[in-house]
Length: 141
Image (cartoon, rainbow, N blue to C red; front, side):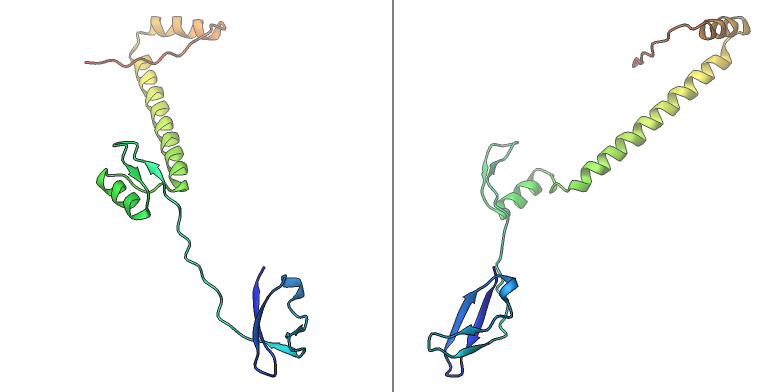
């Protein structure tokens, strides 16, 4: 709840913590006079994230934001951003699409190089309802 400051006609200043719904209600000082609301600067608080973990690389305890930033820089790391996950997912999707396109082009090129008799056998096998399992292998030179 917000804190409001008041001053009565006799110069007494006081604060009241009130719900926003009671913002406009007149407030009475201890002396009995109705007080006027003062315009005051908002309360600002410096909030910093709590940091308390052990570095997964070295095991050294990290207990402050300065240590955290220094530790990230020392190991060539960067602060995690939730958008990074989206970027990584998009990268994996593009990589997968490029791989599938490459496989399709390689298969089409291999079929084009086949002798016509072998193409006919392949076509018959595929149109006869043959089950095909796609197996990817890495060939090392």
